[in-house]
Length: 329
Image 1 (cartoon, rainbow, N blue to C red):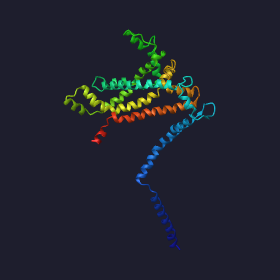
Image 2 (cartoon, rainbow, N blue to C red):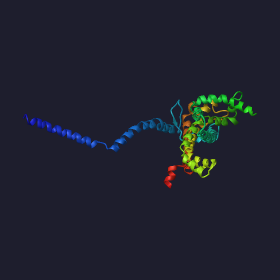
Image 3 (spheres, one colour):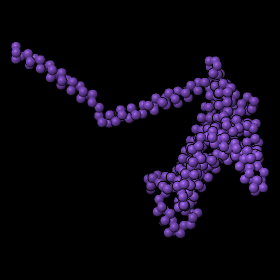
Image 4 (tube, helix red, strand yellow):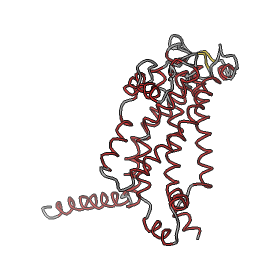
């Protein structure tokens, strides 16, 4: 008995150990599966954030757009009534067309102007000038100042009596208008102000310009190409992906213009600077018409998406990608 008991006791113990090893080996993940699992663990916080803070609120706003809702009482389903009222040409019941015109006016002038100015500054600061780093910092700094502070500053600049802008115009014999208080000049004033942030695009263009191989310019010079041909046939094509990026982000950002109009004009005078997002904000958080504001938001989402897709689809005709050309060859 003294011999057989350890044997009996040892057999099931070894069998159990082997069974456990076999079971663990059966469940062992391959390297690919482990990498996939780790990837999901890294992505999971983003998925949770997207569902909780983006997709969820979007779906809820889609539901609200079909209701008569406010913060004071439960939503009441009204179908597409909000959308029908939204497209009404009656400015008393809807400022949809007015705000869409104001915003389009602002976007389609300020964005190309900002690109041209930012690109021009980048071209200058890409040259070998004295104090180049200091100049780059000076031009970029305004774009990182908070929007409210910038708006308050520009209220002073646009002042009819003692504003800097009108004083400069007076030097050359021009009497400046009351920029923010005249319908004719309020939107141009906001466009002029938007150039304050040209330092952001300037920095991106500068990175794009420095990525152009100098061999291309050297070869063009050897072939006798002048300044304009080099700019047209080398600089512009090589920087076109940067222009594409700045255009996309500029269009999307400018469509959402809000802070300066809210602080400087409150949409006036006579709704001449009532931008789409400001109108939406007033409907939702001042008039508490959450259902109508949600319908407005969804229409705006479709409009911005349309222009974004349009630019993406058109990019094949004017954006130059070196790798794509090489592949085609």
